Image 1 (cartoon, rainbow, N blue to C red):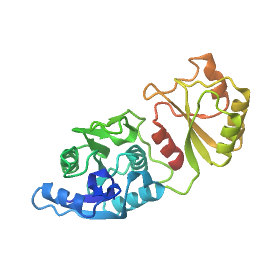
Image 2: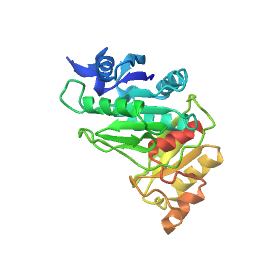
Image 3: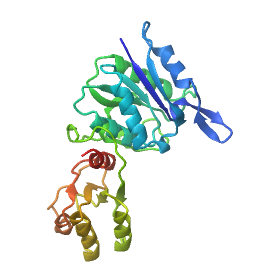
Amino acid sequence: MRLLLIHTGGTIGMAPGPSGLSPMDGLVEAALSERLPPGIAPSTHIFAPLLDSSDVGPAHWNEMLAVIRAHPDVPVIVTHGTDTMAFTGAALSQALAGEARRVILCGSMIPLGGDGDAEGNLALAIEAALGPAEEGVWLAFAGRLMPAAGLVKRDSHAADAFRSLPQPKCQSPLRRFFAPRRLAVLTLTPGLPPAFLRSALSTLEGAVLRVFGSGTMMDDRELLDVLTGAVRAGQRIRAVSQCETGGLEPGVYQASAGLWSTGIENGGNETPEAALIHLWLN
């Protein structure tokens, strides 16, 4: 049996330093080797430098994808920080759709050796990678194996920090890597100045727009004109709900009519992270 470890960094492989927790070379690799069944010598790809996940972005997703594809038919464990785990989960889930891979994401809220959750999460990741788990991208965390396509980090400190929201089945994307694109997640708020939205969109190629409830926004003609103008100019704007669950349902409220008249896309039940990756790859 073969196994590939991609260690990007994150709390699971950190140790205390003079300025707080920072990555420690060799910690994750040693912990993995100690827990593997006899006869398995994993291949490894260690990011250099190791990253706090707040620094992870499209170039790093491309690095992960390239390494995964260079090891066909090999199960993969990716150790990663928790702050952007939801973005990486969506990125790998969508980019690898249809490729019949098994990828297990793993991180922790407390580092290895800290009498916390790291050891248990790593053991679960090994079990899932080497066992009969389904194909796809998963997160091993807090005793559960969760689909990684719709992760939400719900707590900044608790060991049970994540939940997984059901997402539409990942279709094979038009693009398999992340090209440089100017995309962002924007949020509607009461009193949002139209000039701000216009300025933000003028710097972007597309955006995810977090709207109210099941798909409503304020009755502000200038804001609606900004969105309409952006869509007509070729920008892709994909709407998702600010609510964690429930998704969008155009037409339920009269207050949704203006929003959907602008021509923006309906992201349905997608998380903001999943919607952003959809724009990136399609």
